[in-house]
Image (cartoon, rainbow, N blue to C red):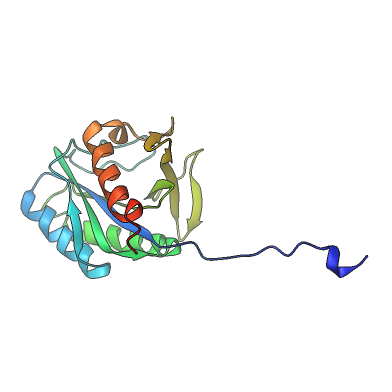
Length: 181
């Protein structure tokens, strides 16, 4: 067989993604300490949501000793490579653990936003999650289709909230509709 008839597959690293974190909390002072620590491992925050509904503990997820009453979402100014997300998740786990004496409800859910979808990370497996490495899993939450985000049936109810969808649409529009890199 002639070598010229073979297809050579191209492997390329995708464009950068917008790093964000959802911080679920009870104590506002702890929220801002967590935000400051996350900014040290990534970059300064660009956008912050208003106070949102709390993150509810999911099945298979280890419950914190206290349920939270609030959450906020922060996006960070520097884009990340998608393969950085497991390390960022591990760092967020350490940050949350370091602050849990001050707020036992604290939970940090990092993820990234691309032009086509939104991904969150977790430390537990489920039928619809993809294993990355070092005990970290990824879950697709939204796909962007027909000029808006659509949730997947398996995603946490948190992401069906209109304010949450609005926030992520605004972030996506800022970074990808204006083609800012």
